[in-house]
Image (tube, rainbow over all chains, first blue to last red; front, side):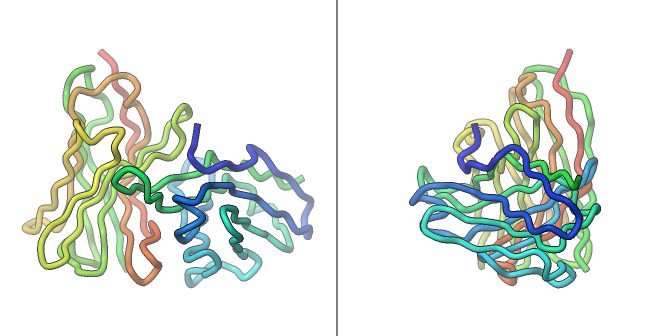
Length: 111
Length: 123
């Protein structure tokens, strides 16, 4: 079981807006930044969002992140077929001696 | 731009040591603003951060508690690379292993990843 909780699946049609949630606790999301990664089949994860809502250069502004308390969300607007992928949230956890934790991933299907 | 190239065996016998290397181009393993991580992914455990090494006037290592007794991550400044050693492996250690850099410019996000190495633990 992953430390951060995500829904296993999400779906939408082209052009729609989809949101993916990520739930944690006070020791991770509640006190640290949230990050989001996109993983296309057979490839390494790619950074999508850092510091809760910042996009690295090259990531379209269709992708946005937000955080409130111990939960976070990734929103994808204007859904496109190439957005079909697995999405993971991550955060630093202050418990034990500190370590990075991930969500279990959400498989996004574009119908 | 930073690139990471992984190398190492894809098959390791139970109880032996898993060894992987990650060669860095476009940055220095001794950078004062980067950290060098190992992360693995398996169907049963999902994405799991294993540990990191970084230089801030001296070398530091952080390891996940789950593997702390078995793991070593070492920088190699002469070859500009870093390595992972995981001792006493079991079939539970079968996974795709990734090296990844994290930098202060992206608030320590894993911004560059290696290509991944599928490691199978089997006799």
